Image 1 (tube, one colour):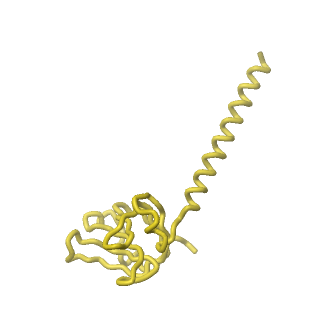
Image 2 (spheres, one colour):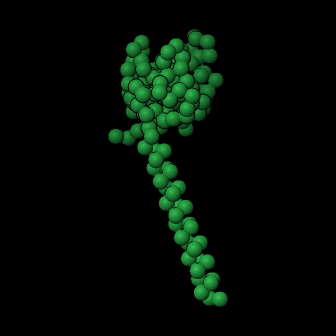
Image 3 (spheres, helix red, strand yellow):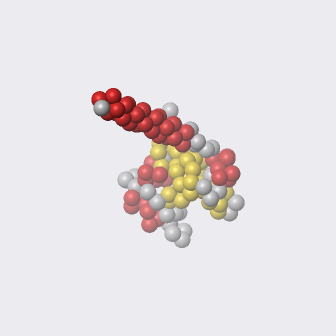
Length: 134
């Protein structure tokens, strides 16, 4: 009986160790799948993480929806990827996004869509944007 009990315990430990290893692998794999702004258009309709430098930013307070734009890697009007924060979501950010993120290397996670031929992610909460420490 002791042998059977010991076997079950070892079997359980084996399962737990393998589960944790598998879960760790998944976390590392998803982290490694950050995409450049230049490649974002290849992932339209998918939720991905895009990393780049905020080259220009603007709070268009007088535009419909009062959007904030963060353009990665190249400034507007030559932008290649845009992070959009609608005015209705700005209150969720502790600092003004157009000032806080300008010049920073960031990663943004969300659903990639196309607006006027350019890929973008619409952000509705600060946790979707992470400043990268280099």
